[in-house]
Length: 517
Ligand SMILES: NC(=O)c1ccc[n+]([C@@H]2O[C@H](COP(=O)([O-])OP(=O)(O)OC[C@H]3O[C@@H](n4cnc5c(N)ncnc54)[C@H](OP(=O)(O)O)[C@@H]3O)[C@@H](O)[C@H]2O)c1
Image (cartoon, rainbow, N blue to C red; front, side, top):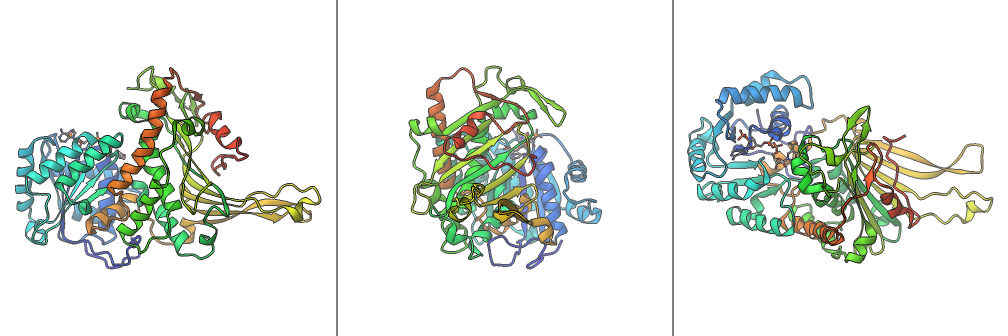
């Protein structure tokens, strides 16, 4: 592991400064869990592989079950073989990294355990050079976020002093409504400075989401059109092919609105709609993002009644695989009213976007797995081409593909060869073929940024709260409706017919993703 300055394999996202990860001890709470094995350790391995970790670096895993350092390293090594997104795993790199990985057995709500952790951190072989510079990663169930932060503070591990650093990464979900998010913010801010709290929304770590800012602000051809004068509407879709699988217990309390809309979809919306920031620092960018959310007035119940659709998947097959109806899924209430699909039409009431609908939809057990943003421009005046009865002039659109097949496509009307007709054609940029560089996974980008204290790609407390304000308004409506059943949609479809009607009644339609022929 050696420090790479301006390594092209993992360039800084927005920051113009070279990446230089300082000596750090990273503590992962929830170290025996799925996220650690699937994402966090593979991310650390790729950072080491790309020369982004310093020699003075240590990782301490914190969880309840008894384990020796060697057993822990062994488990992580096996997981890496399975989940690394580059294969084969470089054994020499892993061996070197794993020698700096340790295990600590403790209970998250036991304050004494944190005092012992503090002692352990001071006695690591790497401690003399690392000093008291820490990154704490809360990869635990959300009910432990607050107590862990408080216990860290009580053990003297939270407050930086004498040039020492102490940062906290918090996983999602962040609260379950506005009130709980505000409470959690207060608790975390009672222990750590806001600038040291890194709330993860892994969508922000995706290269394609970051590229959206480059696309908008590093080019002169799109931004002049990026407003109500030229844009007819915007569609943002996060579609999942899988059902709830083993996550029924959590999901049945969350639903699509809390699990996806509150975070990923609103994050995509803010980056699509924000004003150019004063500078590229975290504060300026997040100021602009939060302004977008503030410009969406809390919708009235009447507005929501007309502009929000929720539904549940019925049983069926996707790709030959049987999927039970949502209410029959493991750990789901048989009379559950939790939505597995939500579509909503929001309006951003500011100068740039007044009158432009933003249609957001997300759901499970859908026809395809994809995330994209579609910007649909106003229809061109058809005067020249309508004269001969050609009514095929269609709206131009930009398809920003977040995943898979990351890239950007432009649709425009072209002349059909040999005929006096037009047809909508595609011009596509594919991220993977456009660049030779290594495409880092979201967690790699986010870990580096938290390690260097770059907060742009993390959600600030006010952003989280503004997003909850909007999701809470949906739940207020749904509570009032007192329905006994939700509309069902077929597994492998793109949601209920009501979601199509949401657009069709305004003369629009959802743009079909390329995955669905
Ligand atoms: N998995 C994913 O892909 C994913 C994706 C996005 C977000 N997340 C978020 O990441 C967090 C972790 O998810 P996960 O899937 O990794 O959960 P998980 O597999 O259930 O792991 C939970 C971890 O917490 C530890 N733990 C539980 N109770 C504890 C206690 N009282 N004291 C100490 N340790 C305790 C468990 O270890 P022991 O049993 O050994 O104590 C285990 O290491 C959640 O907030 C989740 O929403 C996960």
